[in-house]
Image (cartoon, rainbow, N blue to C red):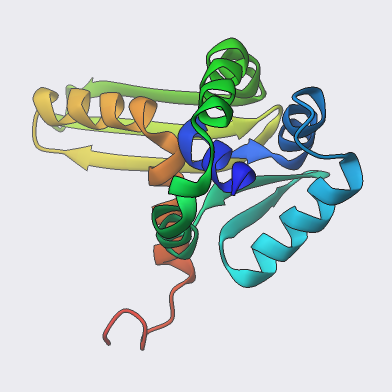
Length: 170
């Protein structure tokens, strides 16, 4: 539950190395247990792991959120406080490994606004989205939303792109 809680609260895709570092530094569990739990939670569908180079970045799935909602109350408050403190102190390092960019520009010859959003893991591009939008306000809103909630947006887009037609209702 501790790992699910961390992945949910950090709200950006977090690498297995960063999760392991957190769990070991905070004396929650040893290296081998972290690896076992990450594998089990990914296999059970509680975490979604996306390979990027030689690292795997994790986001929480809907099943993981449901499990956390059901059993998260059993996580002691002092553990939640330690996780919150750890996130506050280390979020910059996690985000440093995960570069998030969102820009917009106006195309004078067509009169359109364009938005370019991307997520990078070091030199590896994880995702890039390019959109044409109606106005500057939409462009700014998309840029702000992308930067403020990339973990959920990244996961949602991966889920949508991986869903088969029956799951989508088609």
